[in-house]
Image: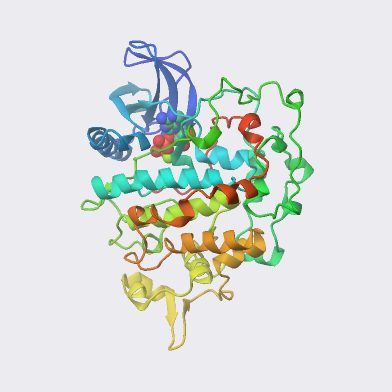
Length: 461
Ligand code: ADP
Ligand code: MG
């Protein structure tokens, strides 16, 4: 991708726009590479997103800047929940002209946190806290600015944590390859494979470099305290030398007040009144209407993605992981997986695009995807209970909360504003204490590192 129309080649020490010295790479995505830089005017630090030079990407970047400007001019309190625009400029390099977007430098993405927990689930109180903040950002974007993000996923939600730079690959949970392997099972396969319990942990070769025992118990969402097998934290001396430990002087999520998340990457965002494309969202987080490329999507497509995200934070697995089969497309598989989880779509959905009608077979008694024999419905509360071993009450409450977002009919999905009043988001001290009985993580949790490796995704532009 480092060719004409692609990424700009950057060296540490480069000075961009006579002002920003490149210190290191923060990450990259389909559109860009992102760099941690020193602002030579202020000696502060910033993140600079250098967009690919192809005109399609430049056009999207100009819209991204417009959206970031709109956010910057809006309510100063609420814009704390999204990444701030500080500056923008363009540079010319061997691969063409690149738009550069300067924002505040933030910490690692939610994906790094999911990996830090070894894809076995982030503890419920943290998930609640993150979800609440995410919904606050969305409520602000949706109601106040009429902006649809259209690409919510862990990679685009950043933690407001100090960035920890390590040379060895630590703190990112299992290796890239093994984490990919771990995600291979789709739900149908998992159904056959049975439960995800303590025995479903990493194989010896999967062992992460950072001792997972120093984290809040990954199984804390789904094992009863009496049977929980929380391992004792290792002494500090057992940690790799380049693993940072939260200490009194390190910001840590004590009381979670420091544990802010911010929404970022507005490269695919649009307005409710001005869409750019029907090709929106990253596959696993795609709402039904965007799977069938309906023009009539709205802010509720972000809400569908929130449900996928919350499930993933709690379990470490994708909620939907569609695969192409011999006789069916990935989209058909996706629709079949949704039917298995929440039941058949209403006829209005099937009639919403001409192409959609060819995908389904409709009889007087059932609606199904033509080329796929769907399994029986496996309700979400049973998935959480049976496969992930959630506590009984928590499985049903969590499923209840998620199902308010997982509706075929976009009008039926609760809005961010409505979701913010849901009981599921309220902290329940006693219950959280019970579930999260080992809270040593407040002192011992290693910081997630900035994980530069994005997952393979079908980014849409
Ligand atoms: P793309 O549009 O190419 O996906 P993103 O804006 O999502 O670009 O940035 C790519 C990655 O760079 C993110 O997933 C994140 O890891 C990192 N990143 C982006 N912005 C920042 C920032 N402000 N602070 C720290 N890391 C960032
Ligand atoms: Mg991105």
